[in-house]
Image (cartoon, rainbow, N blue to C red; front, side):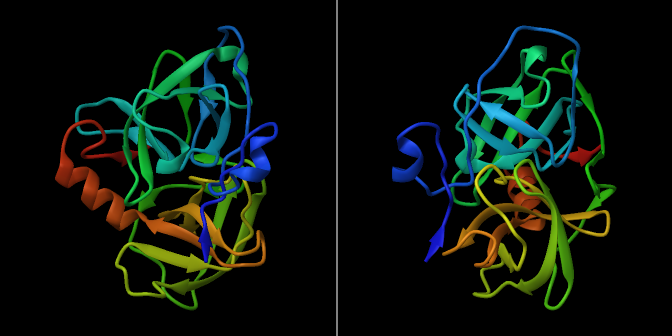
Length: 221
């Protein structure tokens, strides 16, 4: 059984462990926050997830992606490591079928970067197959790598891999080298033991561009 590890603060953390989320709080305004694929974010003062990538859409808006179960349209976003920067953006679209969401960032409150930790993103590519090695940068477990099992059930949407992921890693960028190929969404059975399950970037980009509007024509920083 695939679990979308939902973690929440307080007593709900055990009862609702189904989506890679954590908990957090917001602080007052300050200098802009540095954000890129792999940055931790706080959603609605309650949950923590990871940014997949940041860049501009076809209309020039500063936008980013994360997992869809991290929030719905209207959810507010703060930077985990720069909470004093205040609210830096909000969710403007969430697709629960493909489990991805679009965040519109405030360009006055964010400094976008293409490298966080040990992951650099220089472009977007197709899904990895077996036995390629993929890596991710998550706000909880940092940089981990593992073998890609490919599209196990021929869904044309998801790829399984043997990377360590736990609560808070939802949305983490999955890369082959410096090419973004997917995002972290869930794990199977046991954290850091059961396979990681993620949505392919090719599926996300096809949906974004086919839908139009905010996020369409996305290009990473």
